Image (cartoon, rainbow, N blue to C red; front, side):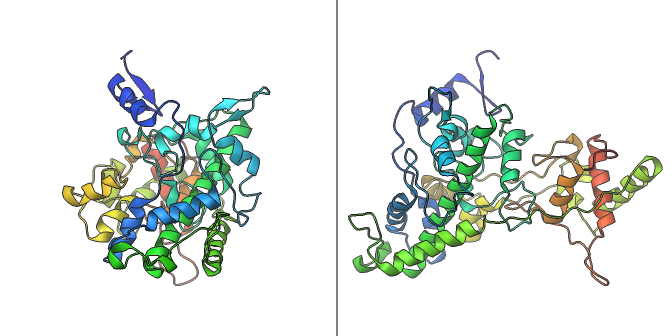
Length: 412
């Protein structure tokens, strides 16, 4: 055991460490962010065409707007109260500390080996982990307090940095100074906005600018071309790009957590009755949790499904995740090998996004973004269908009982 090491919670041997260092490099400068060739191929496949120079040309535009890993930029459309320029500088770039012991390069020292320099989730250690690290570029986050389709709050990102994701390789960084954590939160938002803007520009280039025509090459007059100052030569394109950045950044402006109603005061016989009602809901057709999570939440139900990040380059394109030849082409462009999702074994009492009643309430009513985990249909008004608010709390009582987690006295 002494000859093994842990990377972000995963146990790996010396040969794997050597391979990781060989891929990651020790002192090699990172240069530019990698172009998102995988997404360009996804968009082109939908259009029954080839991506041509789309990813490369968009990457050039992205560098002019967002800078490089060592010298990031903040477009004007991104407010400084969302991404603080000082935090951006501290989190990015090479790892060092100044004479005041202020830390720099925090993302590279703590996150890059798993999440990669561009936030793609395909870092040098990613293939060793199950589940894979999150790809931040689609702007989809699983564990948050907001509705399924909304961005997380800064508090959500800070919470998972401090707590980690139990049951995965995501470690807890609760011992980092608060200012380092704040810098990481802002940098994650920067990478996510950058990645989503890049995706939208690729979509625009392939579907609107002709990059999918003429064997994948747009005619010169329609290409994304920069002038000597690094600005797009076409004024209309500049306006389009600015609007895309503004729209993506605007989604982060005011994410609102789901309101959690007061938890019933479950004690004694009332708690026992709530757990039994929750058990019936869990196994019944109304909530139907057992169809994925198995009898009594043992996680042994037979499922064959994938998360949205995998579906994007497989099933949504008509490619079977088991088609090695087709998937191999996507892997060459940066995709990780497809892995079926594994619904949580609830009897362990381990929840990656948190196990307090308030968090579980939000998880049940919103589901988990990017996964097949749906949100419950909650009754709203007379005559509506779905479960009641009281039934949601009954389910939570049952879920917590599966992992021997106490419910009474744990509410806000």
